[in-house]
Length: 121
Image (cartoon, rainbow, N blue to C red; front, side, top):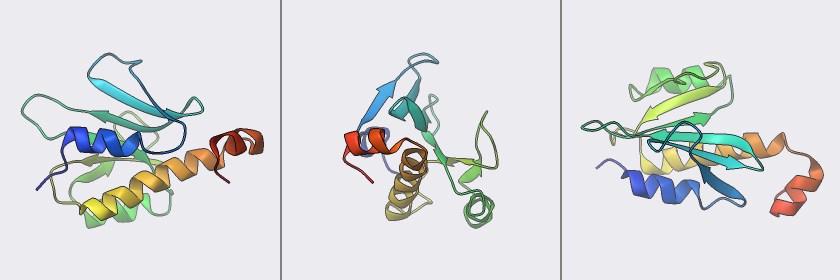
């Protein structure tokens, strides 16, 4: 069963300092930490939702080979971003790991003081 849009949204907002923004309009949910994007989620009528996540550039192409639901990041740097169609073909646990990786990659680029303010290392 595919992860529901609301479930994915709730997961994205569980990370310390995560905030939702709509700079591209009401259909595109942008999730940021300290003003930096770690996920972009959208849904088209009649199609499964999708989420774009930052990814280790060495891992990104491997995930695309392994899962048909994983494609290069839509309108993003294809070396560092994957878009995942939430059609149920990617196990929820694995998707959760990718969300955490995306968040962690963005947080790693923040200053020590900002990370401390978030309560993360």
